[in-house]
Length: 133
Image (cartoon, rainbow, N blue to C red; front, side, top):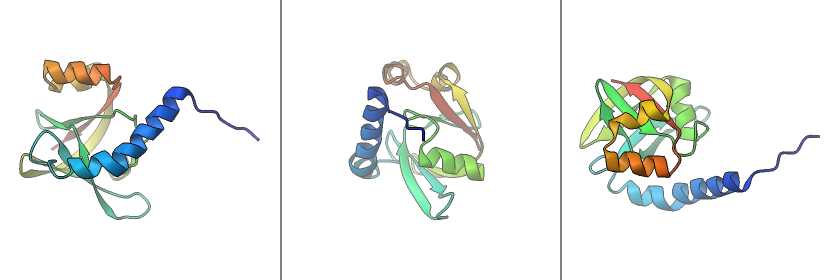
């Protein structure tokens, strides 16, 4: 039997994900879609339920880019990849997005202002999702 031990960083990341899921996300949903945060509407891979998740999405030419601070194994990321798309609410408008691609830091952070790039880099965000309108 193989057991895996989590590193301190993985444990901290797991704690942060759980805290954000239960505490921060419900607060951010009050502002998301209108200010700073984008609301991603995605369908569960197994449950087929509709979920809404606040993210720091940013428009790019013909699409959106979304940082993946917890990597590519979050439920919302896996859900979007499984069904090849999602909808987002951004500044009062709704957009249907398809063709999700996971890209590296340099390609993803270009869409953000220098201040946000600094913050995302400081948070060690290494992967981004790009979706097409």
